Length: 160
Image (cartoon, rainbow, N blue to C red; front, side, top):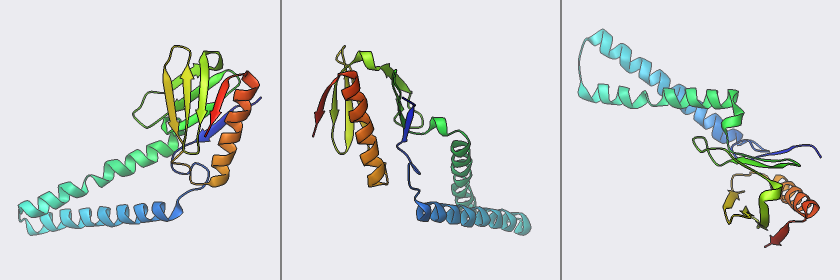
């Protein structure tokens, strides 16, 4: 069986194009406003706390833009759920540690519409939510894949 990679973050199976366009438009607008404020301060040689405050506030857009570009170049740091014959690997968020375990360690699997819970033999629980999936067909495919692998491995499955 080949690896199945399920993305649980933006653009998982269908992208949110309108939100991305709005973000890019807002970023461009705030960047232009930032440059305009800087030019105004340089040309008038005036110092105003309000302009400096607004300028510093708009500087927050730049790290957001850089982080977004970096995440596009390094998709392995996004949320994901990877199922293989050997085990499961997932990451819940950008700054979260990637978790992985083998199927031999899994005692039970609880599968619902919104999430999957892997209960290991040492009573450790791993919860992965499906709420970031944008497509019902992707959600259905993910649930079917998990059910198929769990039944193939002979693990107790509870579906709700």
